[in-house]
Image 1 (cartoon, rainbow, N blue to C red):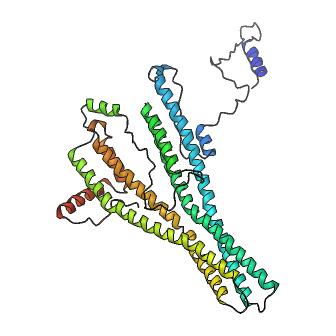
Image 2 (cartoon, helix red, strand yellow):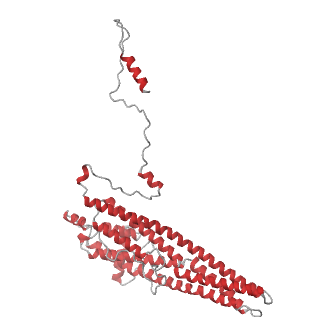
Image 3 (cartoon, rainbow, N blue to C red):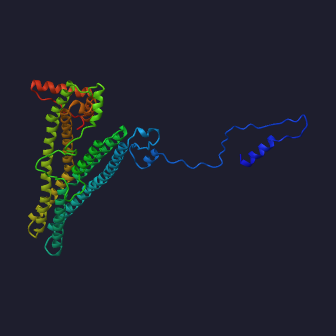
Length: 426
């Protein structure tokens, strides 16, 4: 109904027809507040949930809202500044997640493309040597095949030296681990913000974790690449050298309220027994496997270029009346192709990095338990929470974790070795 129709209706309703006694007066009673939409409202703004779905966010991030109303007295300026700092670190961490993910995909492509290229060069050179040996007589055809095969073997040797030096499969695994750990740090910062009341210690801890991860998993190759063939297997270290505890003021508050923070002698003994199993079984086993894979990778990295180099020399010595140089070149090329397929197709470098990362996981677990046990009870994380986190990290329930601690204690009393590993994940 338009405004013109409404005014006409009102005028007809309030006017009398004639001054006769039988006249019936009519009236229209309208509500006091009449809402008549005269225009179409503008489209509502898209929700943050829709924005996150369109931009690929995996989970929502708590938003810092302006509490300038009645709640302004509950949020201090210092707390707001701390939250802003944490958001700045969170943005940097999210950017690193994307960078490491993209570079990991790129280096995984390197491994596939370089392996296919080197094997094609080697097999083509071997076929040329065999063809040159089968050609009777000398002349230009034999010379052309000799030179071509020698150049191809030499090119594959040079490419293999570079490829075995950088280990593309290991580089890709490093970036995958870095992506996972930065996502873990991202979730930790978001949880800190969501819980509320972050402190400067939280900001400092987040900064140190970011820098430690940058050092453990560098992006550039030249000058900063991790050593792929160390003398001894060493677990990865991606946490700060001086770990920071959780805000101790919360634990002080819990103590003042009469709580013991969830710690007792039984829990401390349980953690020591579990740590003993981690040291004696898991860490030693991964150290043994890591050293074994490292030796295998070194041997394969040396054998590949050596075989292609021998094949290049053999192909250069192919001549009429002598079949041995051709035999050496063809066999060397075939063996080099097999070694390359085993090393890079089997991604032995990736396996070595996987063991290095698993060793670092158990090393961090050991440091976490020892650092927690060295602190006073009022400075520790809640005991029940710490036990639950430890059980989840080892892939066990709380009852399974306590059973493991009892088995460790019995085996130590009896002087035997426990027959199971602490972790059920790795």
